[in-house]
Image 1: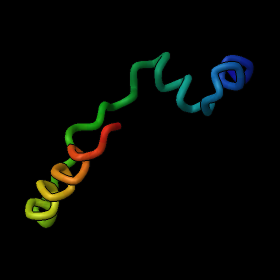
Image 2: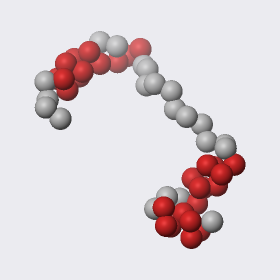
Image 3: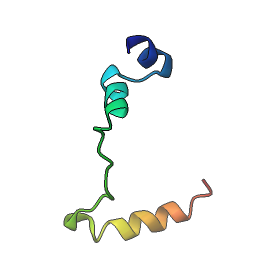
Length: 50
């Protein structure tokens, strides 16, 4: 397990979790306090070429 993890450049726990299927996917980020700030951030980011 250690050799696989070091070859992939990830932690051993990550490899173990992937093999056993115990990883949880993250949902979309959502906070009520950011509702007014998020549209402004998206507007600024949309103006950038990359």
